Length: 257
Image (cartoon, rainbow, N blue to C red; front, side):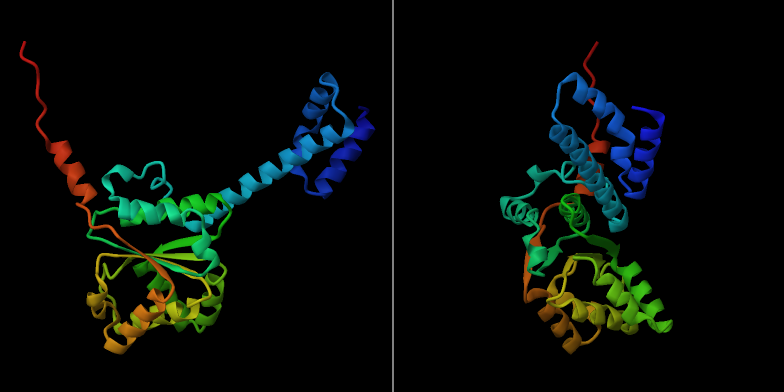
């Protein structure tokens, strides 16, 4: 291929933003010549590589934007320590159908039971399949909402958050919040009702949620909106961290000389 042809092709590919084709067409052309590909086969190979790279780049952007704990993956989730009644609904969430139906996911369990890991693992699989999910802790989310309210841009922030198919709110009720903080959280939940999925982890049962929302009516309204279309998972298992700590402190037996 002459220098003029190469320069012209590179310029066109750059203008069309076909970065993978631009970087690989020469190598693919050599392979096509060696294996006697048709023009259509040569073109298909280039286009497939471009599509694969774009999909990879998109997933990487989604993972970065998700703010998920990437170390808490599905492969790292110890399913053997979880009862079948927990594993089954978690596997069912991997299809992502609940996002299409705007259903919520509520995961309950004591501290250390693996709630955050379970939700992060499911969400990572969904993000890798191209779904848009954002994760945050309840405390950070509430502070972000409060700041937006004080800056008179709460509607704008709610609109930004609505772009995510799923919004993970980790550790609801772990830190006690003021009434004003819970009011903005309720506003968010009301805005997302039947519009987008919310995935919540909490160590407090519904009967204790008045500690969170401070008012019986607000508590009932929040629970009603979350439970109306939801999948509830209860991780009533021993603390993973406590078990790991016990194993690390177990005495090491040595063989007698």
